[in-house]
Length: 205
Ligand SMILES: Cc1cc2nc3c(=O)[nH]c(=O)nc-3n(C[C@H](O)[C@H](O)[C@H](O)COP(=O)(O)O)c2cc1C
Image 1 (cartoon, rainbow, N blue to C red):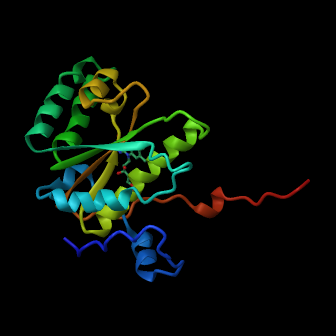
Image 2 (image 1 turned 90 degrees about the vertical axis):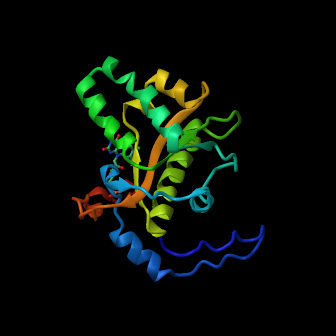
Image 3 (image 1 turned 90 degrees about the horizontal axis):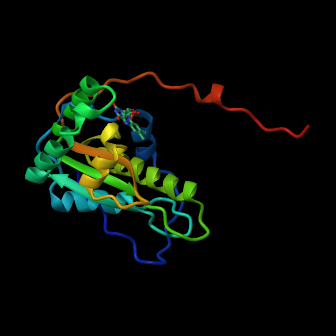
């Protein structure tokens, strides 16, 4: 996989705002890899630590870090998947719920991004949005390092029994499962919305 990650800047270090053509080129073409295409190897512990260090460099109103990570890999992932699978037949659409489990079973590494809601003046909405930013930053960081990555929720992000199995607390939600591995198929461009048609200019009247 691609290169090493630079060390974290020192606290207070000047970080110039400057153009990054390589980042622009990456953003213009990046795609998630299908979870079904993710095979071993996935990132090892050190590589995952780098990905997570990059993922937490997101806007976070109040500097609350209203998120945490649960890494699910190896035999523990098999055990987690088996316990979740036992809930599939009780979903509204058991066939669909069982089929969705393939995306959980297949990739070698899963990181559950847990959104927390911490008490105080920062609205819950903003704390949840910061968790979504972490998910996307992880997707970008992993992809930029050459890993296949996909952000999935599926029913087991919402079923309270699955959240119990995962170890979520009462105020915690799953922002997403980030599936990581080696992409065995190259993704193709998908349809994209036209940003212009979604944009208006506010005017006073
Ligand atoms: C919050 C969230 C949850 C998602 N959950 C699922 C899911 O459960 N199943 C699925 O097939 N795709 C899901 N997706 C979409 C995948 O991430 C999809 O592969 C992605 O949108 C591909 O777009 P990209 O190539 O631009 O990243 C989800 C996306 C988001 C933002």
